[in-house]
Image (cartoon, rainbow, N blue to C red; front, side, top):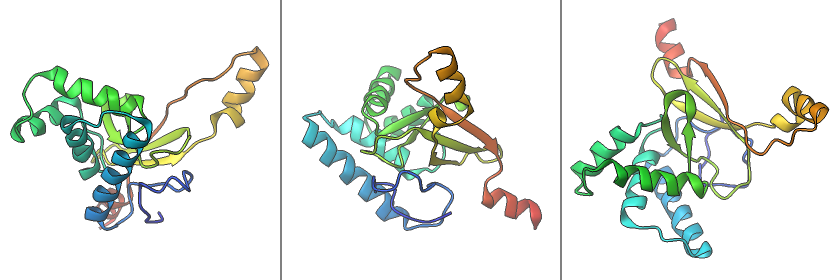
Length: 172
């Protein structure tokens, strides 16, 4: 996998998540991109929303709402589930995070600001998640939709397998 900043919306086709990279820069750039986008669009990027995004950026695996709530609680942001869910709803609605349906969990968007149809590769051993671009409207699903007159508005593509780190450990 190519290592690049997940805040770079220029190339939503490059998979992000399994590559070794400067993680501190990754988190800082992701937060800066979110702050800039919220400022440009007049969105309120509250301290709790920022903290939830920071928590998601610190991981390259999906986190459930209660794991996020535990982290929020330890950082003094409250302990009621709506605190986490409202922040997650905002982040997902504005393309700063995605919900991984299979895990009922969330991950920071690797391509914020880019109009894209993400595909997620989920490691079944460590729950690491990499985000890549998909084009379901151009593949078999798109052909089936066109044949029936259906218009695809949203897709969620999730593939389960083993990430390079877990594969290397298994081979050792």
